[in-house]
Amino acid sequence: MTAEPGTRVLKAAADAIGAAARSLAAGGLVAFSTETVYGLGADATNGEAVARLYAAKGRPRFNPLISHVTDLAAAERLAVFNSAARRLAEAFWSGPLTLVLPKTPDCGVSDLALAGLDTIAIRVPRHPVARDLLAAFGKPVVAPSANRSGHVSPTDAAHVLADLRGRIDLIVDGGPCAVGVESTIVSLAGAPTLLRPGGLPREDIERVLGAKLVDVPASKVPQAPGMLASHYAPKAQVRLNADAAQAGEVLLGFGPQAPAGTLNLSARGDLVEAAANLFSHLRALDRQGAGTIAVMKVPRHGLGEAINDRLRRAAAPRPGQQI
Ligand code: TXA
Ligand code: MG
Image (tube, rainbow, N blue to C red):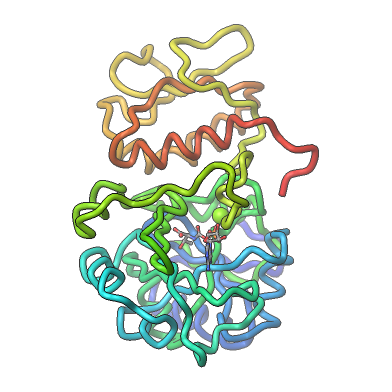
């Protein structure tokens, strides 16, 4: 892989983690692997670094970012945990769950990263590259997905480079992401609410809470850009619940019933494998120049909720200008 001047790509190793931590400390932008998707990291306490991060992504200014920390103790310095929040953190951290909680008065995360809200989104990633980087840096790192705003999230270092080459300082290449869709976001600032389905199935969270999660009413103003109707969009048009490709379409399969030779999210019908393949398969079909991607039906349980959510947004009518 060759990088343009200005964006270094380093294979994950001790020297790469050290270089990445130094870059963050100097206000730099560092993409790194997490178990969900690649994140674009900046020092959460450095407002200028956060401003550069928004500019690199082309992200609308007022969308808040997730603060990534090493463990629950570090998270408790940033946010006020109630007993439900602590139960979820103990059950699922480290892992693909983001909690939205009231922030502490002296949390130190820049107001720009919080978009002026009095709540904060926190995640403790599981991937060793993310964990090592957070430990080496020693402060919270804000990290949206490392793609241009509105594009499909990156699940390997080549995807990051395709979107952000020359716009960021460093990419730590930790290989492909195991989960493949972003973290599940749950707000516990009020009644436990599912803000974004993601890499941790709703059913697992509800089991630990002992209660159903509230869904965000469709009428509500989006609290997260991932909730905008058209988001996670490939270049091609997307048609859902297809049985077969029509003229001018290319089929994205799911399960053993897909025709032989079709790119398949999971030939054995496994939702975990399908989530891990989702964004890279959409990018691969885009690279083939597909006009329309026809996607076979994916069941809705478990990780199927997040997969169907991303596919629905990819298929939604596009605004004239991508956000
Ligand atoms: O898996 C992930 O969560 C990845 C990896 C890199 O950790 N990150 C990620 O970040 O998906 P991003 O910025 O693409 O999505 C974070 C979402 C945004 O939609 C944002 O609006 C929402 O979290 N968010 C952040 N703070 C929030 C808050 N206080 N209240 C509600 N939503 C919030
Ligand atoms: Mg994103």
